[in-house]
Length: 335
Image 1: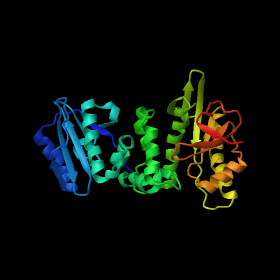
Image 2: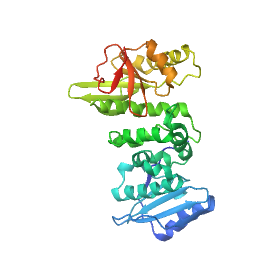
Image 3: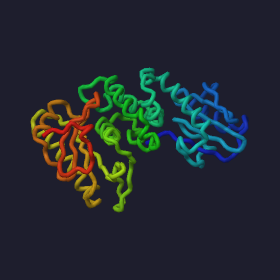
Image 4: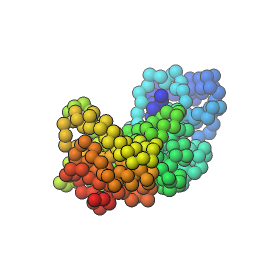
C-alpha cells in the first residue's frame, strides 16, 4: 500500500533532454503519459514539469541547477528509485507551494465539491491525491459523512473544516493525514477511528490545551496526545467503539466496554497508568448513545472520559475517576 505523498530529492543536475529520456519516456512507455504545461508559476529559479498519465495519475518535477524534486501518485521512474524522500515542510518553499497549487487544482477538477472546504482539502491533500487512497479517502467524506451517523455530507465536512481551520495540527499534517490511510478500500470503521483522534485534539484545543500528537513513552509505545497548559501535562489515549449493529441496550454498552478493554489491556496497561482514556462514541446513532449515556458503563480504566460529538460541535459525555483536565467548558457532562 502506497503511503501519503512525499517528495523525492535528486542531488544531480537535470537538463531538458535528461528529463525527456529518463522521466517522460519511462512514464510513457510503462503507463502512457503526456508532458503538459504546468498550471502555475513556481518562482525561485526552478524549472517545472507536469506529466499526466492515461490512467489519471499525475506527476510533478521541479529542477534547479544541481538538484530536483519529484512528486507523483504514479510509478517512480527508475532514475529516481534511490533518492531520499522528504515531507512538505522539508523541501524549498517555492517547490512545496507550487506542488500544492498544482495538486489542489487537480483535486478540485476531479472533485469540485471539495473546493468549498479549503482547510480540509489542504490538510488531507497527501492522501486525497495519493496513489492508492485517492478514491477511498475522498469517498469517506463524500459518501460516508466522515464517520458521523445520521448526518449529511455538508454538515459533517463543515465540522471537520472548522476543526482544522485553527491550524493546531498543521505541524503534524503528514502524520495525522496519514492516519486516514491510503488503501483502495473504504474501511469506515478504521477511518472513523482515525478521525476520533482529530476530534479528541479539537476537544482538547477548545478546552484551552496545547496538543502534541504521537508521544513516545518508555514502554516503546506511543500514546495519542500530550495536553499541556501552564499547570497541566497529561497524556491522552483515544479509542472509538464501532457503532453497534443491534438496537438492544446490551449492544452499545458491550461495544464501549469491549473497545475500551482492548486499550486497557494493551498500551495503557503497559504504560503503567497516568494517561487519560478518551472513549469517542461519535459513531453511535442517537438510540445507541442514549443507552450508553443512561447506564454510563465503566471502561476498566480511570481516569476516562466517554463522549459523543455531533457535527454541530456539541459534545456530551461522562467521566470515570478524577480526570486531570478541565473539559467542562466543552463537554456537557451528564450525571
